[in-house]
Image (tube, rainbow, N blue to C red):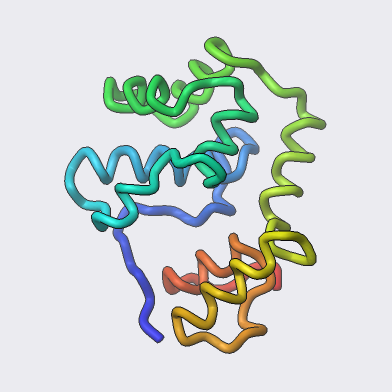
Length: 147
């Protein structure tokens, strides 16, 4: 078991203006622009079905447009406001539902098999994490928060 440590890449639980995963997505874009993201990670940024694409779909924006905006610079909050302007601004209740959905993805749903596969692939016990967010934190050397 070895953690995939990437300096500058925050947990998916970390929030930007109350919104989970968004900051991590921005980190990946910024790190990739500096060639500081592992090549396999760079290949899957923004892919269909991935967390980045889910986030962009929820906000009603295109991933490539977000990437271009991030590379222009600005704070996380400024970029989130840009996303709200270009796509849609979810209500506080919608963000709460988004956060709950994302934080529990992999727990008793279709993604559970992926969590189990990733745990086995990484050499962790099958009960080390119940959700993808917790697997990510575990794999990156952070304490598991929810499982």
